[in-house]
Image 1 (cartoon, rainbow, N blue to C red):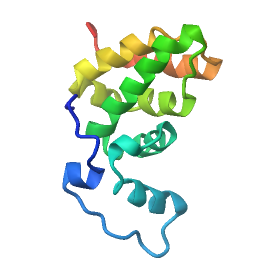
Image 2: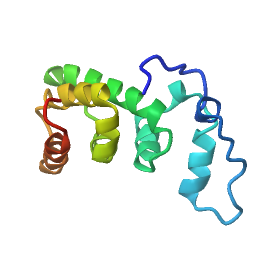
Image 3: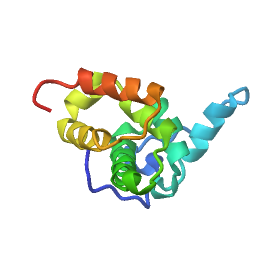
Length: 138
């Protein structure tokens, strides 16, 4: 996963896949994912990133952005920063294979989540599961 991502490009431009229009009977989520894939990734809000990541869409480009957001929020947290629970959940619940394949990004996420102090019981459980799933040495 590249850390230098052109945020002015859409997922369609970055991955070269053009899904076209969603089927006529598509769910709201499917229609929304199709729409968001055409937007520049730098314009996606944390809740939109969370939905896309939760659907395993655009992970090579969206996970680095999400980890950056979470790291920045974690650094601000002691001063009253806000952690987007949906984004945190979407990121830490990706499969261990994703993190094994991208150890530097996993290290960055590990560093960010270890700074978090104001998590709900639910969020703590998900973060602990993520940390436990990491290979030794990360």
